[in-house]
Image (cartoon, rainbow, N blue to C red; front, side, top):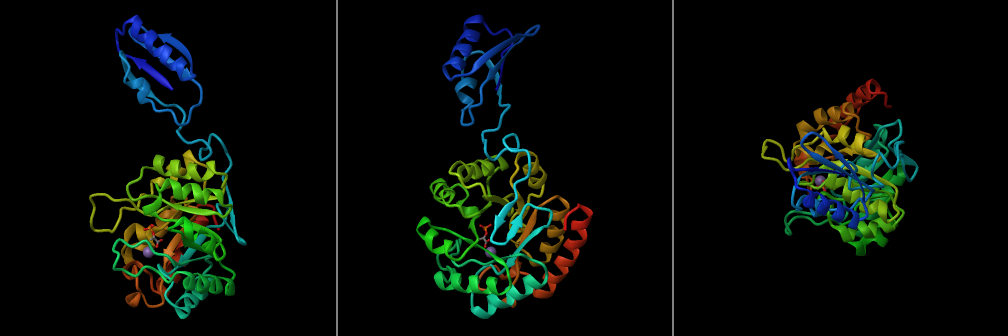
Length: 336
Ligand code: PEP
Ligand code: MN
């Protein structure tokens, strides 16, 4: 941490800051320029609140040089993390494509999706059995029955399963059917939930909260990692902005930002990120071009009768086109 003192700061204030830094366990190196004193505070304290120092008399500015997260950082682990989920991987050379309906609705529906997505090269089947809906009157998911269908359909096509966990009480049940726990955008900062999921050894797909900065998102990943669950996959799914021609604003700059800051794999969900079917494929192409490790795509055999997120779900033929185009772009960026 670097503490810049105000021009002409008086000695008692400078000493006050040095004492306070020592009190928090930092070693202090003082350098004096022509007009300004700069204090270098040495010591890694990930959770340190810099306001302890910025409020002191004579302090002009405080800059962190280390990130507030540790296990999630590139500084901690330089090589990319590859998450093994079931028989498939996320973060390796091959793109990980996770696709399926928003919600599991019936055996026919989920089997049709599994057959299609596997034939097109996806390795994960997605589908919600417990749904976080903005309205309590909307379809809430099929629960256990949906999990059973999801697993059967995935197994029939050699796919891994990713499904959302909303309640810690559901963990044991869902663990029997899934390869990856999805933590949805609305729960990204549900810290007690993160701790519970972090205690398991099942890989986690952590969606970005709709108003979360990348730093806050990585701090949430830190909760999982700090509990010992090393298999964390990040998922950019759009954030809330003033723009209203799309459901959310898909922040693709998060991909290179995360890649620089963290060793964790990051995938992109252009379905929730745009909320509009004809915007999904262009943004899927862009996500892969930006360096994403994979995609999460909503697809449905009959989107017009889907119980949730129909308008952003692709028709099967659209998913085929998406995969064809994404494969071409993958080659350009050195992925398969
Ligand atoms: C979903 O994946 O179906 C979902 C609800 O996503 P999010 O948490 O990103 O809204
Ligand atoms: Mn959805």
